[in-house]
Length: 106
Image (cartoon, rainbow, N blue to C red; front, side, top):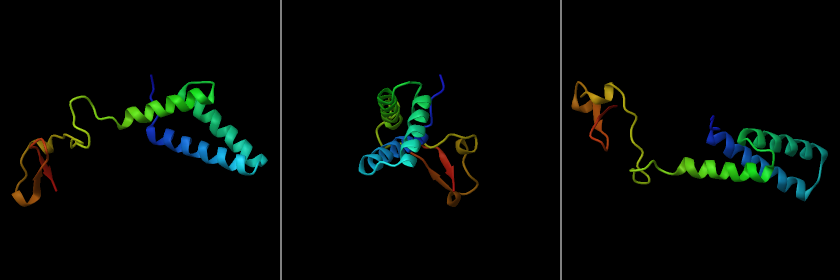
């Protein structure tokens, strides 16, 4: 299954909410069309045909995207591992060690 990009989902949810507010404050045909387009896109992206289900699925996706993987403490993001990161740099001035003790070239 293809998982939507959380940033795209967040952007769509924000746009949906803004358009709903705009439409409630002052109904305009252009706003209604844009709201319909955003609603359709959100439903397609989340694989639903109902906007309430799409919003619930989007919320669940975003909640899962911020949870740390099992075994990791919140707020601790591991540095990406590369072949260069596993070897010591030429001089100590060029390096820092990350939380796992791997060298990071600066």
